Image 1 (cartoon, protein in one colour):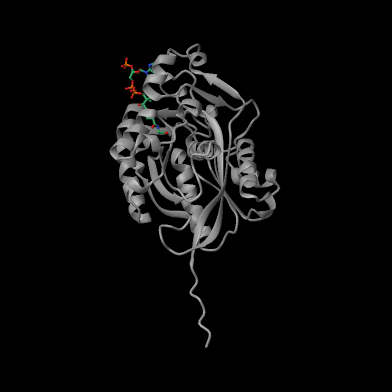
Image 2: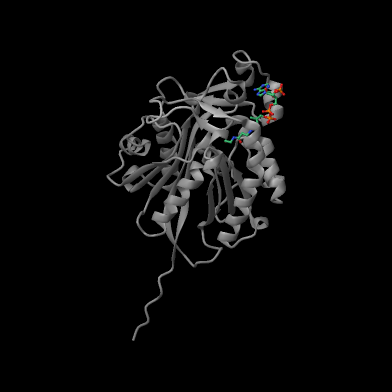
Length: 331
Ligand code: UT7
């Protein structure tokens, strides 16, 4: 009798990455003309030098489509192949339908699954983990996971404590199933850890919403309190994600963190024993683009040749909720 081979493990492999930044660049000096701040303060406290701002009429879905098109081209796929779209965003085009549905229409992708994930700055890590659940279960052959934000639309331009910190942009990855051996040598998403502590809502939130006051609201943050939680929380999630993946943090080739503040990502790297040369930083050029910041940073590191197929990546983020999380991927 012929023995049938046991089915191997399905892994969710990142096959293409793309990013998009709006054309307009806003410098710290420009912001110093509208609020009481300075280039020196912003650089020293955050590492931010400039950020991009979406043009009038440029919506989150437009940024998402631009990034997704590049990711599809990098993967050698077209919109016709896409059967799942997840957009992580805090700044949807409309309250509904989901921005993912608008992206599907604008891309010309066929009928499939499309929805948004709302976990604020942690959105991309959350969305990737959700996509993994579908891709690794064989329910999607070609998924787009996109982080896209027009954060400038949520900012209070009279609040110097927040308006200098954020930028607009989008990043996308194509995720496809590939057979693996079930070992840490497999390409794909190997492990993750997601967290939320809803009792910390008041530290970072928007003061509006359809069912509370029928408004969009503006971003409110107690920055120094969020800062205090960040390093400790993120470090714990990193350790849990590494354990889930079965790897040691020391084995990671590239650390691709959420880009909120240079001091936070350096603090996390230090606490987790990650060498500074392995840290991908784009915060100086992009500022905090919320759910877009990780895929934008990944895109930058893939584009300049730092990140190579087969390397081990560690992603982490923290944002409103409070939410936070980390994931380990063999690229
Ligand atoms: O991605 C979502 C997660 N968000 C974050 O991770 C953000 C976390 N927080 C941070 O990155 C930092 O807390 C900030 C960059 C927001 C602030 O830095 P800080 O070192 O924690 O400053 P602070 O909030 O304790 O404020 C220190 C001083 C205050 O003045 P006084 O009270 O000491 O007179 C602020 O009013 O700095 C003042 N300040 C500013 N000064 C000039 C706050 N914002 C500004 C500004 N320019 N833009």
